[in-house]
Length: 589
Image (cartoon, rainbow, N blue to C red; front, side):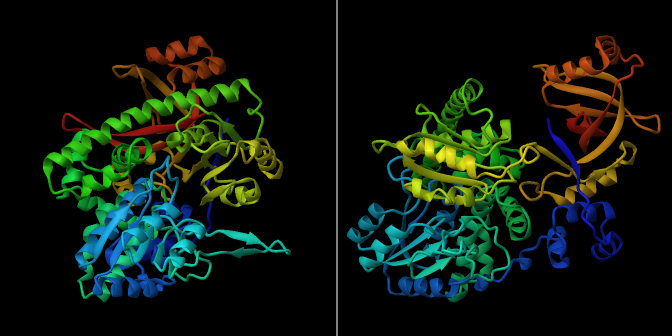
């Protein structure tokens, strides 16, 4: 069951339409995405690099850049401490290439997901001291690394934190939040409560990119050169699933242009290994094909493989690394499906099905895929989900959580910090570890303090507006393309129509997995509707509502009584040089 909601944000569409020189329909869609200020609307429709915000507005930015500049000039040894996921990889590549360009003596270290866990740790700091490192710069981590950074300062190592994760806090006696920062020399994170930077949703690579823009300026390098790094930053932005609005939209739009004409041997090899050679790279390609391969190195092997692939100047090595990443991702897919089956079995046969927050311990899951499984289970049951598995440490369990829009996982799990040995994240995701003896207490407390209602736990379908099918035109579809790339914060526009009659239905595809419906419009004409969901379920619902006889008539193209409401997106189908309008049916009732 799901709830359909038509967005209805108030705005003067006439004025917007005139100012932006776009249709009122397009203005309505932008307003529905909470993009209201004229400068943001203009930036969205015309996403140019000159609309990026001034990076010097970020708290501690100039302090951090001056520390880096001094270290480069003095030929000090600099080490980047990154993370093992795609965003961390992108941030490392951004910093490493740029610091090298500035003449810095720089290398990088990536923690091992299983042996080290997330982010900079005491081992990394001690090794840096042994190696004569004078400055550590973190990326995509560090905001919660209090102990590791305290140790670095004790060992007389300078530390710059660049991160984008939520800032840790404690609550005082009045239940007021007191935010706590690590004692680094500079802490650069737009989510700092005392940071006036106008855009808070950058990914880790995005924050690293802003740092490099200022560094280039201070080192008298043309800022235009920094834009060459956007192919890496775009990958991190898409794969970290941050909102594709404001600066993120500009970064992705510009980055994808560069990816499609990349000279990077590693990226070209990975595009070839994944079967994308000769095809246009899109946000979908990054998020669901290339990104998972890069992430797989950190999940099942060592994350350095991906970084080395992007940095090598040897075509044979690039190809070898790319093939390895592709193979690892295929292995990861298999492990994920096995894990999902185990968790579903626990839910369907155990005591969790009626709980609002799933906290599920499955010792046979590989900890590297716990987050992916949590996301898939969250989508299936529309419940905030935490998947835990065995840790290498005795009596410890660890894992990841994924949330729904109605539940701030970072805030809620923060209330249980006394039961956890480590924790970090943001409203929609978290990573944590705890003693197995605290598992039941943790599960009970999370569920006990949750205020989720039955309505909160219904999946929501947000419709931009009701649009009769006869209003669809080639001009409309072309105009909707102005909103690309789509992603989190900028979903593909969805329209709704009621009481749509079906003239005829066909099951298509080699695997019989596509349903084509000939939809009757109010003007008497027809338009093709394609549905890629569960066809058997679709048929059973029609039979239950209208009867087998009417469904049979529908498949034969005989006049029938079947009608339904649909949520759809309009597209253009091109085949053998011919173009025709069609709709993709996303939901029906």
